[in-house]
Image 1 (cartoon, rainbow, N blue to C red):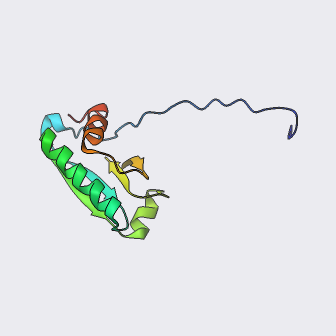
Image 2 (cartoon, one colour):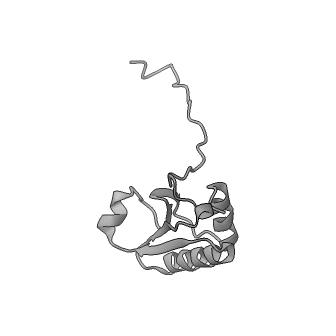
Length: 112
């Protein structure tokens, strides 16, 4: 059991978000979905607007959805809001990202 005296080795690695869009990418012209999960508060509205601004500035073919249904939000396992979901993967939660941060994130995911 080793409850006392031995420390567990921490083998966790930093995991960068990966987008599982499959064959759908901005380069082929197909639209992908970005979802904002939130309760309708000011921070959620700000993240929604910043996401719209980032997608518009990058001229990406993306559908942006704003989800406030708690049952739907729970399916993503999100415990703090607002949350940003790209390609059905949660890439940010509990933060209001700036427009430039969202652009950097989308670039990192290969959606530019």
